[in-house]
Amino acid sequence: MTSSASEKSDEVLRSALAGVPRVATVIAYMPPQERERALAAAEQSYERTAQELGFTRAAARQWASTVLCRLKEEVAELQGTGSREMGTELTFPKIISARTDDEAGPDGSKKEGS
Image (cartoon, rainbow, N blue to C red; front, side, top):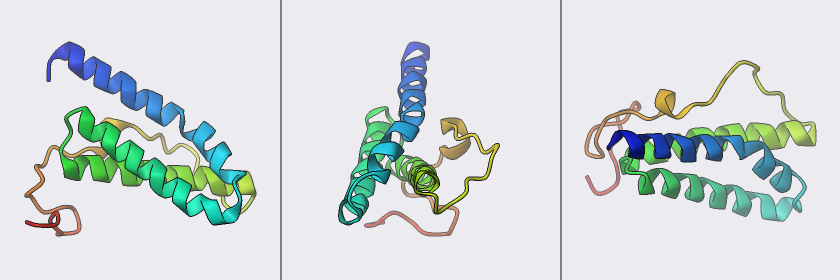
């Protein structure tokens, strides 16, 4: 990835993270029966964004999963049913690993079809 492509990727990912509170607000005020579908759609969107920026499938999945956890925390906080741990800044470099899709993940699992 070139320097300018890397900067653009960072900008896109920062924008996605900055949008988490807005997405959480929308989801928190949805009818309960629609929330799970909205959360799944958000996770798919985050994963697709990371993959389109050139990250491996496994790395994109890991990042999307972590962002989804933050999103769920925000939703719970808005609904008054959860508390978020303060000081846990979510950034892309901390979450994305450099491993390829055929390497085992942190839990020892491999991607489907491997």
